[in-house]
Image (cartoon, rainbow, N blue to C red; front, side):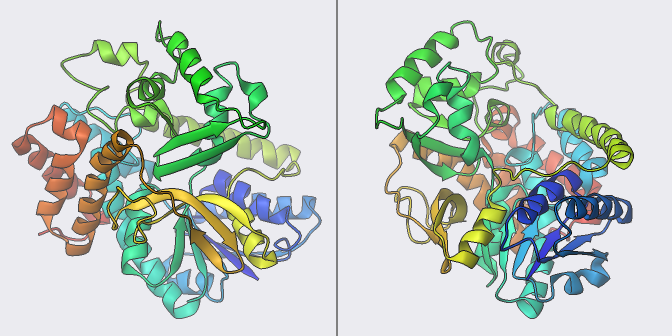
Length: 439
């Protein structure tokens, strides 16, 4: 079997996902095809994964494919394709995503899912993913495409709508949601055996139900403890605690992400909100710099000391592959089109994050029904932006880029229409090397 990793220069993530595969008996003898356009990063991944492979028994084989001219060969005959690309990288594109809006008075925290940063990232990435899926339709038409790249809903929604490739979007915030909530509230002893129901959209999927191993509803105690903990706003998760207070439910992704998904938390005219909610502006660029420096040090240490044995992570990819191959059912939180109205009060064309069952038949979304109306309303404010960004990428109409930015909750609450359009024009010009022409 062949497992292809697109964007293998994302060395830490490639190590985790492929390392997971090496832990699984039915996957460990696979050919692991690494693809990237950066020769140095690709070589670093090869070195790490070869060392890991030897440490874990020498199973399987590593192959490397560099550059667009080798892309089809990387994909040819693959059973599974994992996508973890970042088009334009930290430098220059992420820097532009933050610095150009900042000139117009628009501040961001992460900028990879929604907002102007998420829109630009989608417009850069979708053409590359279209190339991937066209190649897959030719050389591995039956492969599953497992997308980890953000903005998840925009990218997975586009591929599912406009290609024939079997695909699902994957994010680890679903797996960590219960622990993120219960541990800081001093309820970590209730995690073991607890059951959850999570549905909505990526990074804003709602923890609709959480019961302990005895079937006891934990939300009454969660709400009481969260309200008490938020009194002095010293906790790092204040935005999500606000969601519990005002919307009734916790959501999957961190407060630092969710601070920029609405109108409420980052406001130029209310700087005190930044301090109150402990919101870290420009957090993603800061993380990028730290991760780049941290990886240089870690790589040098690995070369000196060798690779430690990998322990299987909570990432879904290897578990999806295992479930399909062995026909052993496994449940995931997957990002799929809502065409079956799995969530009845969200649009059919939206990409939703819902429970899905995995087995030899593939990935089967499950019916959720209606979200609480206030949760659906919050999701729709984000879905509007996602659908317009997808439409912009398909039609290449600049007006749709403007409209996506205008309807973004954070952007629209801070800037007037003329300013938004000027900002979009500046970003499209600055990143023209990574974008098709928008008319």
